[in-house]
Image 1 (tube, rainbow, N blue to C red):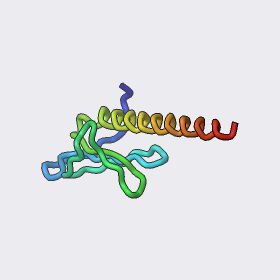
Image 2: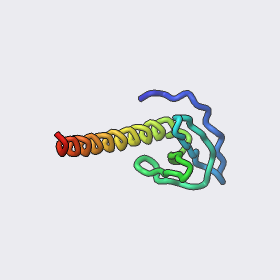
Image 3: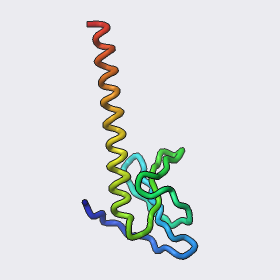
Length: 94
């Protein structure tokens, strides 16, 4: 697993989790939070187009990698579905 070079914000008992958000340019933004978004397999998609998750500080690297890997798989699946639709449509006019 790739080790990301990011500075992890300091958590507190009131805000024990690190929230990461990834924007459409692939930039990662970190903050502390008291909200839990489900860990690996969980996460959120925001109305501003960012997506992310929360985790404990020591799990941050793995959680980011898992979230990005999951997003890649979803996009690849969507591309595959679109390619099938294009093929079907092309068959109509060929």
